[in-house]
Length: 365
Ligand code: KG4
Ligand code: ZN
Image 1: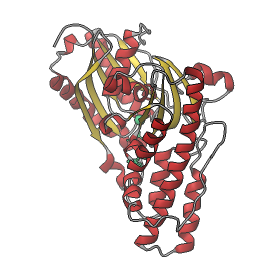
Image 2 (image 1 turned 120 degrees about the vertical axis):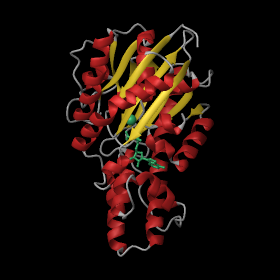
Image 3 (image 1 turned 90 degrees about the vertical axis):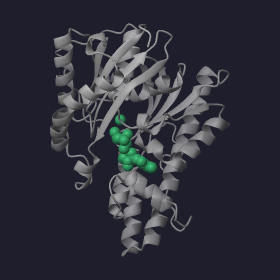
Image 4 (image 1 turned 180 degrees about the vertical axis):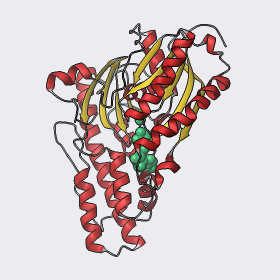
């Protein structure tokens, strides 16, 4: 391992994964993951059908120190050779964020290291540069349990949110649909699995937001439509459940395709497609094969490369936080003080959204 570049320790505790990682950003801008430890709390929350914030925070407290030690040991980098500590400081569950922040601050203070509070969404947004060295600008579709956004990634710290959900996040819609059909948590994989044996066109659901010029998403109406059909069909046979899952997934896929087609067109009008720009997908829902296939075909048709980072880097992890810290540091952006507070809501394009009145408290981040 050469001595150049930056070695960053990253910590992530914003939701239901406790994670620590060490990432190396070389002077030429390429990256390598030296260690990446993630502990999912899935089993802890499964019985409740969703994440319980208090349980999540307590679990982060009990495992984070050990995970940080493991990440350092796996990386082969001594704490004394780390260049900075990066930690998710929002958006997310406040209790969990506080656990990560206090740990990161303690290490930074003890080792006199620079300290960076990273926006979790910026971690997702920049991952494609770690995995694929993607050049700016590019278009990001972030689809997870907490977020559904189309983001123009112009540069480090320079984002434009082109669209977001006006109600449920897409992963949340999968989870709620699964729950009302009696499938397990998390619902995404269960719905995808059931849809494989579904009969097409037995149920027809609307395609939310089709051709709406705002580029936003909406999924709660779809979930309600599934509930009404399920109630009318009760008691539900396995076949009916499968047919409803397929109808739901087809509507979701058609809606994503419609929104992304419009976003790619807008991108092309502004930047052209001469350099074969990238459409990047991130978030847990990116695991869905029907969604991936649809997006890949749409990107190809529009003259874009399609980039889906490996699944362990699409879902929540600390490598993306360490990497975002490295990118910020390399770009000369300022460090944070040890008085930095966690933020439950923190839109990526804060300056822009403040002007038009979005992203305030109460709005979805
Ligand atoms: O990014 P992620 O691991 O966690 C956060 O939301 O932060 O995403 C989890 C979400 C859950 O809502 C889960 O149901 C959904 O991603 N998901 C899927 C699939 N696998 C996971 N949704 C649809 N199809 C899948 N195969
Ligand atoms: Zn996430």
